Length: 251
Image (tube, rainbow, N blue to C red; front, side):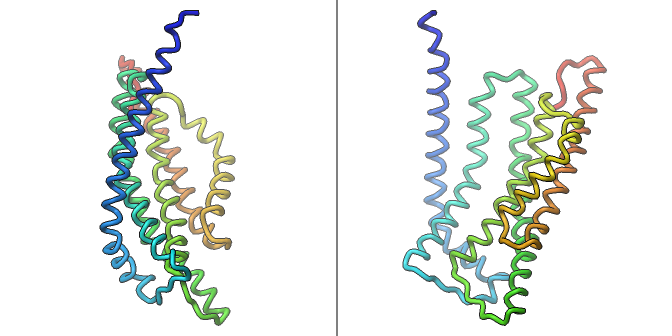
């Protein structure tokens, strides 16, 4: 065996370490900025429904710290994502063909837009509906609602973040279809298993009640069906290009 053979692997590991260090450095800077703006974000979130009608409480000396850190981590992760995706693209692009590199780079800004739309949908639509449901349950039980600040935001993040991530599904499917790893037929055959997974996911990321899980399941199912349709669109366009004489599938 040639002693030089392990070198490419070591080079890849070195490159991966470099990319990860860049991402960590950007996250650290974004986290510092997130800590600086956390009070203003918190003031805004407290001033709009449903939080505007709530008396804020903390139940341990660390609750306030946890609240600041959680908001800062969320802001930092969101701000770091463009750099992380770009560093991932730089790491894997050397092993891609030209049309695959173009497709990957093209989908990065679209993926960020979908994430922003997902977070907005989760916060302004799914979260208020879930909160209204649990509020109605408390009213029917005639109990006094005393919320801890960290518990309130934990409830919010557990809904908003997964819904935001779910909005990435169509982009991932389009990209994988564009480079030939997925097809609409595969997605259709996988539909029954996909819906089972969606039910499990919606149950896992919501409070333990059927209504909240159902509220989250609806947009997840719509996103999956949209992904199947978009996969078919990309697949047909790719086939048309290849039939016209282009060897590069659509990305």
